[in-house]
Picture 1 (cartoon, rainbow, N blue to C red):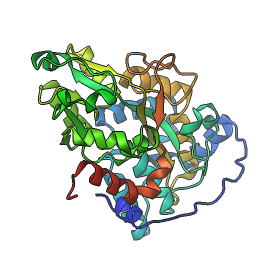
Picture 2 (picture 1 turned 60 degrees about the horizontal axis):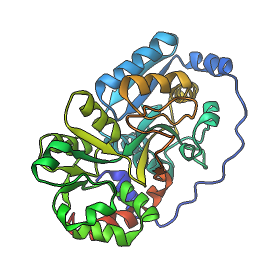
Picture 3 (picture 1 turned 30 degrees about the vertical axis):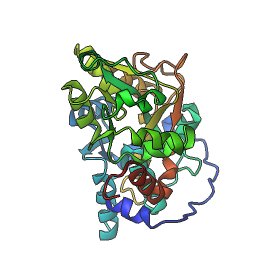
Picture 4 (picture 1 turned 90 degrees about the horizontal axis):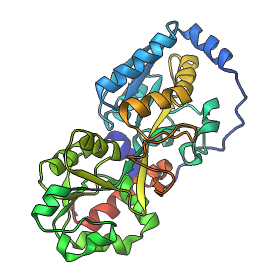
Length: 339
């Protein structure tokens, strides 16, 4: 558990203040101010090859604003930011990571309040009402299965979460052992009684979404509720017998981006955050890395999510303030992590 989660476990309420009106600033003015800073430092949770490609694109387009990226695990980012702030020397300007890891920094007063101009083009759920973060892209969590493993075990393909409460699927599906954000969204939609039925049907637990994907491919279990849609789609393109079903509901989590409160290069940070959610950047990330966009004017890859027929339920990043509640609820429901 990261230090930010330890802090959030102790929070019962935290007022982050109302959102002030942000003045409209032109792209040219943003760029001119950013060029005065000359550089921007980005802490990001993604594959190094992905961060490098994004940085290469940005640096080629804006050579007068040099982007340096530092890749780390999602739960390491709040630890690093908190440590730097306590030492009185913040190195990061911009942070991108899983929703609860970044939004949690707002509740510990570690993020700057800023709403980039491009936020006006995002789906409403991807814009923080308090002004501390915006959604960079969407991570869907479909019902995913290995069609070969299912056939070998004589099981019919499941079509919904309700199907997985059937005794024929007992011990046949996996759940990520620490995805309290996923649990939070399901409590708000399908309700605790159905989650109790899922728990009673013997799910398997693994640590990490990539671990879940590998286990599914290897036939360790035939079904998973903890594989990101883009990873399942990538496995399909490599000819693995993986099928993803966007059941109703399908939970979606955001990768979100914010600016550190004491950013050394605040103008460049604002420019880069705005660029990350621009049409050009989201199109690039969507095509190259199969991420689902947060912008309505960038088409989603329909093999992962089809807006015309699939319904997404977005997890609320600000529910991180109730981290302790959902951590306890998940652990008690599924009898894991010492519960």
